[in-house]
Image 1 (tube, rainbow, N blue to C red):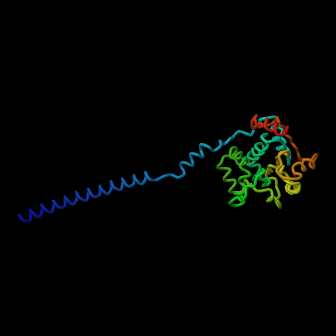
Image 2: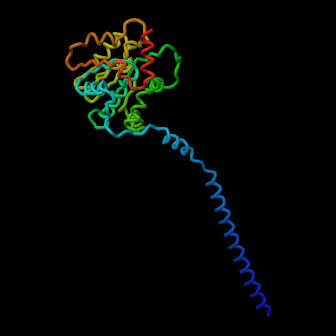
Image 3: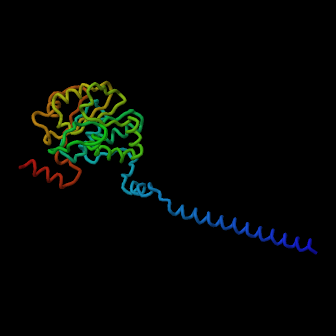
Length: 270
């Protein structure tokens, strides 16, 4: 009788222990599940918002070939394709930078060249920005933002970032061109050339190697330096040289906006 009652108590104890263990395991599972849900709800993707903004505001990658908007642009594009050295002279808004950067992007994407070099004199337009933080590339970045926007549009932001990191697109001040040689695998663009001195322009022009592409853009009437500027001086010296073309844009070739055309008329009249 005692043995039977002990057996019943033992069975009841084991059943209660099994029930307790099961409830304890289930409780731990549910608690862990709630904890995981709470942790997941507290996770924030710090890149999600920036990616959304980049998608919203990044310029669309234009895959179609560069097309001229005016007859003057068409002649300028053909001149760049058919000459080693091309000068683009004229007022702001005529598409000098856009055409040259667009052709450079096409040449890099097709593999006809291996590197784009963007340069300009580090001269500010009538004001002194003072000390700029960062490395040389960071300091000079503010001067070539316009070209970067064009390249982003023609190649895509990701491609441009990759090329900048790996030296396929190089942006450097004009002073850093001394000692370099532009070879056949290079497309070089000198912008704002009206702010060069004749000495600087001579130094730049003597970097040109065989079969490279060099485009020099500027507006002689908007120089920010005192004394003679290298662009006007160079245009007079290169007349008649083989492989060199000087293309002049007029106020009627402005495509930026009709207002810009009228403003230039007013400023150059008075």
